[in-house]
Length: 630
Ligand SMILES: NC(=O)C1=CN([C@@H]2O[C@H](COP(=O)(O)OP(=O)(O)OC[C@H]3O[C@@H](n4cnc5c(N)ncnc54)[C@H](O)[C@@H]3O)[C@@H](O)[C@H]2O)C=CC1
Ligand SMILES: O=C(O)CCC(=O)C(=O)O
Image (cartoon, rainbow, N blue to C red; front, top):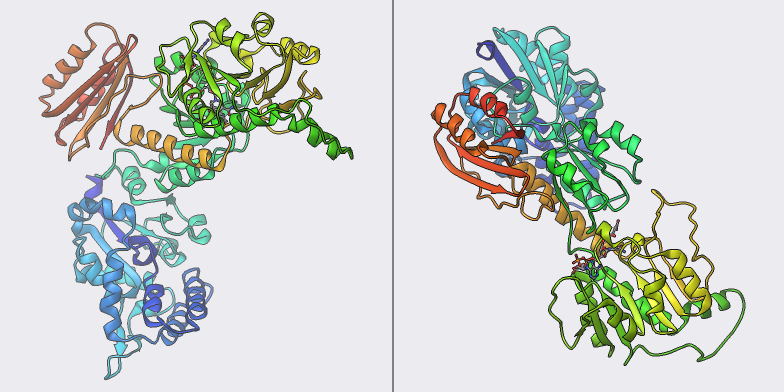
């Protein structure tokens, strides 16, 4: 086997650990000194100059040891701290270090005094750690290093590896230029620039391969690893300026994330989506069947909002793409804006404000009323409608509501049995129905005529549910005394020019679909949706998916998990189990969830099995998607 004739040479600082050990030592020894930060910066500068080969390594070491002013006793503390600073993917792949123990070496320009105890826990014995050693004075103060050690000199790693005379393919894994030079000198066969903790341009530029973590290294070398598929290989495209926390959370998890400020046209998205595994959008991006045809790798779509009609949910399902949204995060923001706008409209605040901006003082009580005691008609008594109901009652409004569903009244709200009843009675009509396409032009001329003369109208739901021309006519005639409109039948993909028939009308508040655009809501969405995405990618959970059989899976315990998505036609489940039985699989759990079109079967199995079972499962007729998780 190729793997058996291979030797793995690891760097220590910033590769096996997330940090440079001497920087940590500096933190310890300089504790309490007023010039601590300055000295640490100086040490880091010298470290980097040495790593990048810009000053000789010996010079860098001499200078740092002097500045460090460390004592033998400080080393125990350092080792303790380093134990908690092992690189994330190194720590999770401990098994690799155990299995390939005999083939793993550490060559470092650091010091054995702290490297040996750290790597011992990873089955690397001290005699396979090549590093410098400190020299101490009689009081235990570190005064220098063993200058006879090849690793204390410039390009010492080359000499060290040469002396080792390792047989077989030698792969070097490290973050610095001093690691690359072993490959350049022809002593190592391959250099993997390790960028999990630091991306050093010089090392990356010269690498045979840039590996963002050990998972990727093990994956490309077909070595056993903790996770089935390195997360850096999973590409996430976030559009429409979703909150940067989403980018950070998903990047920290190890995914490769791209964030664009705007939405994309269908053609642009078709081009871009080809190698995307996860798409994150808000309300503008249209995920059409045509887009999905090109989305060969797409696993899930995250709508960073409530509405999902911009996504062809059926086409997603047929392709095995689970869609998630954030059904609650921005509801309070919409409600607060609705309340604010109702008060502003009732008091004719916008006309008064416009006048004074134009240089006119018009102190008047005309068309200015309190909301207290007025009738508020809420159409759509869902998550938003209900919250609004409670707050409006708190302001002394009488709440009426109408919903096609059977919704329980909150507080003293009065349920209307028809839309007409609600329109007849309301001083303010506010729309909070969902984005179902059937709601197209739901409020038109007829419905407007059913409203009280001089009623106020608010729409924070979807633009297409209102006939804008009919509304404009009613506003001009005074049938409707004022309106607040946040959503429009056609909205631009990015910020810029915009025209609506409602432009310039008196007592009309126009906002660019910002009902849910508050810092709080966007932060909450940026936590909620990425969590759903990660849960689906990492464990297969589909709880709260809007288009997919929902299933909450137990934690995967020391097992492999097969996720099989198929068309829900008779016999597929039986075929899956037939294959599992044929391959003598040891099943520890099996879960199934279906809807009319799709079946989702999850099977947890013992880790040891004939890998041909995977091919057999993928071949089952009506399979849509299959993946293995571990
Ligand atoms: N302006 C903005 O920035 C935001 C807009 N929204 C929009 O607000 C709307 C409401 O959101 P949620 O309350 O979370 O939705 P929801 O789904 O919880 O409630 C919608 C309610 O409307 C009812 N409904 C649907 N069609 C109806 C009809 N024709 N007549 C009467 N009732 C009908 C449903 O039965 C449901 O109870 C959605 O369209 C959503 O996209 C949501 C967040 C932000
Ligand atoms: O904030 C957004 O992009 C869309 C808000 C919205 O309309 C929704 O959540 O449905």
